[in-house]
Image 1 (cartoon, one colour):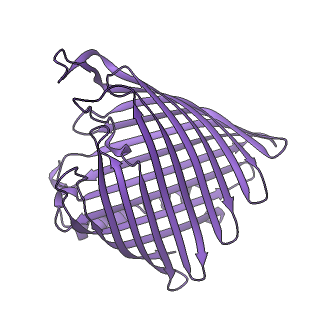
Image 2: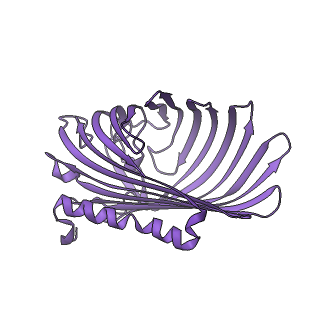
Image 3: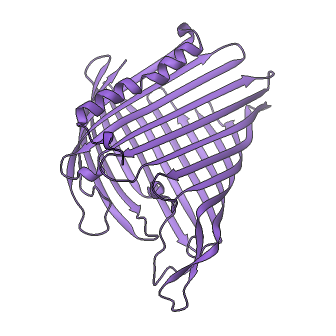
Length: 361
C-alpha cells in the first residue's frame, strides 16, 4: 500500500467530497446545465457491526463512522438521452482499523433514438475499493451495448453484448474477464404492474489455474490450464408502482459450470424490495433468500470462492427515514446477513445497526 493512504480520516473525507464532485462537473460541461435533472444526497452515519471481518468463528465487533455521497444526473435531447450516476464514500472503524476503506462507483448510460421503435445504447459501470491499512484493493469495470425495440402490446425487447473485468491489486487469485450476451423483455401487465423476463450467458475466464482433487482425497492440486466457467442465468422481475408504494419482486436461477473441481453449482435466488410512504416517514425494505447446491462433493476440503465481493446470499435490510425538512432527513437502519464466506458452503452471520442524517440537494 502506498504511504499516502495513511492519513487522518477527516482529511480523507474532505478529499473525497472534492473528488466526487468532478463527475457532476464533467456532466454539466457535456450538455448545458439547464438540460440536466440532477439529484444529490449526502449521508453521515454511526454504525455498529457485530462481525466486521465476516468471520466464521470469534467475530470482531466495532462501531464505525460512515460518509456517503450520491449524485444522479439525467439530460434528454430530442434523439439522445444521457444518464450519469456516482456513489462514493468512506468508512472508519473505531476498533478494527484494518477494515477502514474508501469506495468509488460510477455509472453512465447513453441512448440514441434511431427511429420511432428502435434505440441503440451503451451502459458502463466502474468500482474502485481501497483499504487504508491492508492490501486488498480491487477494481471492477463492466459495460454493455444494446439494441432496444418497441413492439405492439407495450412490449419492449432489448438484446446486447456485455463485458466485465475484475482485478485485485495484489493477487490474481480472484481476477477474471467475462464476456457475455443478454436478452431482456419488458411488458406492462396492468396500469401499475410490469413484468421483465431476462436471460444472460457469460463465459468467465480466470487468471488462476483450475484445480482437481489430490490423490489422497484430502488435498487438491493445480491444473496446467486456467479456470473457465460458463454461467447461464434466467430471471423474472415484477415491479409494482403506486402513489405511496413501490414494490419489486424477482426470481433468478443461475447455473455455473466450471472446469475446476468444486466450483460448479446451481442456485435459486428470490429478491424482494419495497418503499412505503407513511406521512413524513419512508419505510424501505430489501431482502434476498438463496438456495445454493454444489455439484461436487466439497468435503473434506472447501474450495475458495472466486470473488469475495459476491458473498451476499441471505439478508434482510430495513430502514426508516423521517423528513426533518425539505432537504434533511434522519435515518435508522437495521440489517441481518447470513452470507457465504470465501470458503464455499460455509456461512457467517452479521448484524448491523446504524443511525444517521441525510442531506438532499
